[in-house]
Image (cartoon, rainbow, N blue to C red):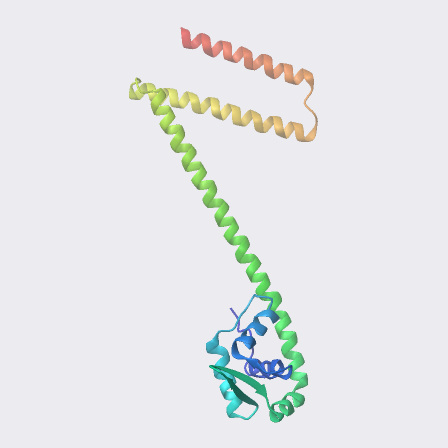
Length: 204
């Protein structure tokens, strides 16, 4: 991922945040996270060394409140900020662009994760269906010879394939024009005839 802040930009932005009033380190981290809409949050290891450097340069001062340290911008810090307002405006523009980029990346990650989740769920469901189907088939054919099981399985697959193909054709036809009563009656008659013929062959 490209860096969120260019060299020196975070340092300048910290001065801008402190211009609105003294803040603790964690408040600066939160303010930055809020500015990025939750898409980015700097670590303590990123913020505190820069605050320490700003203090060394006299641009920031500190006050101790119990165990916590509060950071304040100094007159020198305000002077530097005033002299670099144009740079600060460019930093704001860069942040806006970064927020859009990070949000796009986050949305794409979510979409990819959802696609992966759907694929995993579909694979799990298919494995469960196949396992259940195989178990049911073995139960039904417990007394069959291996050859008899093979023939029965092939016959069931033929019936399933016929059913699936016919459903697709009916739906494709229905998408372009309604199914007529005559077509429905033809389907019913042909299927009844096929059922009778198959039953007769099984009984012979």
